[in-house]
Length: 240
Image (cartoon, rainbow, N blue to C red; front, side, top):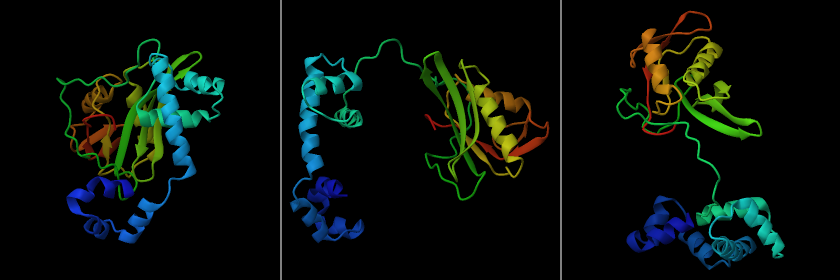
């Protein structure tokens, strides 16, 4: 809040901003005159050391190597602190291998409209589900996961994991969520990202084959073979 007032005081003035926020102008001025905390002072010193070491090693050091180098130089600091400060500085190390992508947008594929508009909140359960794909690196290889979350409670209602990014991975997670909730889904909006890889667009088309039309839909759930009413299917402009 103090940083926001500092950034906009020349444009709007301190007192008008304080009336809107709201915060007492005296609180703002007291915060401005207060000396920096011990943590802030230490963070400022560490940022300088982290930037120096990162530059000296040609920008290849990540959190682990930079943390160890700090200790070799006698600068004792927690690894999580190094990670936090590197994030604030926008520094990262060089990674071996290629990055993994779980979402590849298909601009040519037809998809429903975005009915959520980045507002991921619901007034009661089974009004809005959001879904996405992710992956976890393990010693034996990558594990891919698809998840469906109820926006009302942030409860994980459906999930599925696999060793490969198979096409029906996202569909399996959705069908699990429908099976677990067992009805009461009238008016539900399901909001995945818009990638074609991983099956969210494919699953919409696949479900359309079973009665889904993208607005008022009847979805055949493989769990019990019965139709479940789902009012709308929403697609994001990016990851949900």
